[in-house]
Image: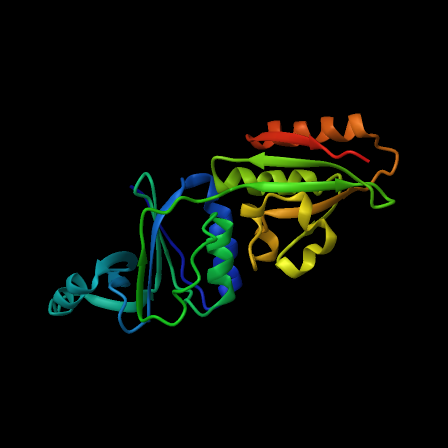
Length: 241
């Protein structure tokens, strides 16, 4: 088990940190959220001689350690957002349930069905099954729909990599809300359409190649290569004119 702990007053930095450690964690199976006064997850910066060291405690362990007068505490940090993957790695963060960055982190990790944690002092979700699907509706410059690419990935880090690769070839427009689909709603599977998703991690997307000369065959080859390079699978569904 590894513990990845990151504390920052800037929630955007916390989100970026999670993105940076994606290659080192597996699928998230549970998470916990707490108001800061109630969290049992505490880190203490202790002074030992001329050195500082990080010590992680449960609240009970911390309260017991305070009684040891020989300890010199430099700083106390309280973590309010804890995630665990299926290999028991833990991620300790300090964003709250009311922050948009917390929602972004959950969606980044493929956890998109949980929204009722926001106003609870404590919350725990278990037996999670993350979804890393990435669907791309490819159109030409005349807005004719060419094909739908259905990417499937085992982990969040691979999905992120695919998004980075495909953006090198053109313009990706995520459908962050159901309202944004318009007439294109019918091209996507109903179970992939949600009322709202974090923009950067949306399941369904529209895509236009930057090079207008790319034909259907070349476009499909590029999409297949994106899947290969990012470590995923793709199913291409042609759309009749």
